[in-house]
Image (cartoon, rainbow, N blue to C red; front, side, top):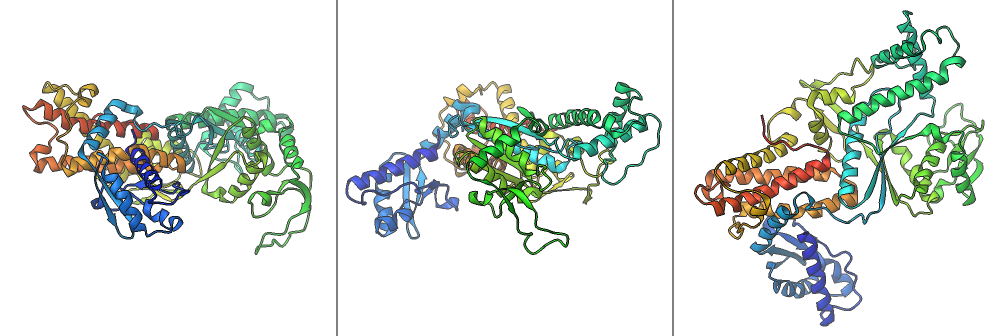
Length: 581
């Protein structure tokens, strides 16, 4: 049940009838007619902009259209009032039985309430994290991992066939640096003193890798030139780092469907095939790029390169794919990787990048547009920086990592559930302050506690009801008489429950899982307000001593809230708590 979709359908039907009766001209487009929660809850339960968006094409006064529409809507049993506001907005208040039915639908649907067929089974690839395999994941990767994983879950819940994918950047120079760093730890394991020069990775996490390499090959590489050991150690170190990264992700509850190696694109003809596909479309040429605007380097000189005509697909400038020395640019394998995604038959792609990759967005969109002839959309979501604080001070870097705070540092401090929820309390492209003290405090200002407390409170009520001999299984509660649920505090909770399917659809369409976290906080606030109101108004308490029927009706609403909270937390990858300690 999606009451917003139902009322929207009612509005469209009413408009169609007005057209057939001659009250509105034929041929009007109703695509922009919306039914939404009003900005001010005091104005009603829902509002429609129908009169406003149709006034110009219909060449009519919006209030005149609103009056015709209001008359039609008032005839429906679900509409209690339909009032015109301002220049022509129509505010609707729904009849009491609607809210009872919403509550009932939540209980009947259980964890499926809000699930939709929005995606219609379309294949969606969500690529996220994709960190260089040179060390443990840091806090920036943590935000990308949480965002990407929650987005993938949201899309799957909304009817998409989702593949979670990690692109292993194991084809560039950074893995050679990793190999040299591991070699130093390998020599160290043999008792030699070593010095980590600039550009190598000094983190303690490589000590165990060096020791394990010693156990595997003995002294076979000691004193040997790079030509003997570089490739072998590079492969060994990359595998070791990916094992570490997989363990880091597992500690956060993130599990990928596919790990795709950049290295697999080299020497296999895949890069050449992707560029050949672009060349066949007339999008590859030999040319000279202009120097960067406003910052021409002193040593800049015009060089002929192989270029991709990305400007024909929305980019600001054309992009080099092959350097003047014949080597591939960083962009070339990325084109080939996305060509592979297109060839695998995905209907849409999402890439989750760190904020430092903002300059890469247009070129990747251009590449996918060109490779798929505009058939496969690519949405690139950027995750902004995370600032960590503890005891009022910036949280220092990890000694183990050497230069940064790791994902494990965060999870070890507060646990995966708190980490995940807090990472979603801001929109992905907004900076996030993560205060270890505040995210653990038990207060309304801590959103994860506030939501978990609401769920735990409801579970506590259910346990007490069972102890009192009241049946509170979902089937019994769904069959309860909910007609007495008329207090404004109760209606407010039910009205918020009614928003859940609509909220999920909006979040899935916009690729914004943070909306789920915001919604759960708001729903929990209404539950807490109703709970506290019960301290002043005994008839609002969930447990009505000696009155089983009323108790079941009250608890039905609370249980419906816990169903939605549990479902929402599940989408975010957070485990709902049964009781607070």
